[in-house]
Length: 495
Image (cartoon, rainbow, N blue to C red; front, side):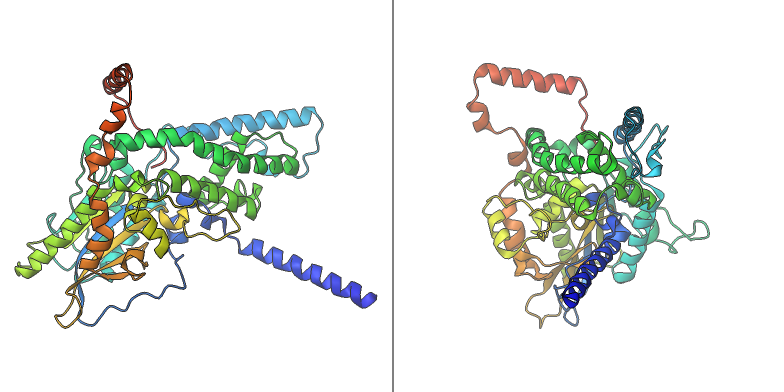
């Protein structure tokens, strides 16, 4: 009997130790979905995937980069949300004291807490950490492809493009400072000036297609309530758990704001023992999954319009490759043709572009999106999923498409290698390899999307208009005209 009891105690003790070890190994900074810092998550990749060995004699002749801006501060709208949270926490604490509730388990930092961004009048700018992320990426990119970046700088050789949103253009500047460091004469770091060009927000169909596409904006607006409804049960479950745990009458909105606080503290301030510590690891995993689910439905594979509107960007990438091949075939002199096209934008750019390439899918899923069939939503934890926001589009997240020229004795003359967050990544459209013959890449991955030009995807469909009564069409027209007259602006909060 004693031996049996000892065995039971030993099993319980081992389970407890295992559970504690798991919690200690849990790094919340790797579970912040698209709010993750690049330096924390860039090393996360599919360990089972074996990258291709580049054949001898193959050399890179052109590089396309599509990158998200680096870590940014909270937007003005979110700063106000955190101020409102501080006010409501005061109310909850006062109510608990009036009711003589025991607050022994309540973390001390919550009493009298104020937002770290209290009093800040502006927001959304690139942070110092964000500058470092892009600066370091520029240095690593030049070191990885020295033959591509050995020419003297010229804007026609190294084209750098960004959206008109300041955090994107600032990211382009930080990247360029790293890329060209030591190649100029400015200051101790021997920096050099370089150009960053932008299109107008109203017509930037290559990097801000989500802001120009009327059908997408209508789709997103129609789906947001349904996405909120999907998230409600999980938020309600976690809110109930927080109430029981801390004896405060938290609301669903409080839980939403506390999760946002956790993400900002962990990502921007490296603080993981305040907002994030309110939640258990399993709760963090659920909250992360809900953010991933929202990105999947509204920006990713959830609906084909999410990525089909990015066709102008895909066309631009392929065109740059074809121009590089032409320059090679015509033996243009070094310094007279483009060797890299470097773009800096937003999660709403990087996520659809990754989907156009068919990343984070298996073969059968890739075939489904080619047939425009819906994909199932990312499974709920603890089930595993490929679609992880911290991998798909963290701050500074990026896709590089490297064009290689190979010797005549290889099976093909030109290949494309795709790197996601600097790691080779399998393309289901290229039989699961990261190194794909250019002709195959164009035929299997690019061509199916080119059936859908931007205007046909994004303009109001005529057949939908024909189904509506004349009065409805007129009212829609007037609403559209008045929205233009009122200078309607798009929200930048989630970019």
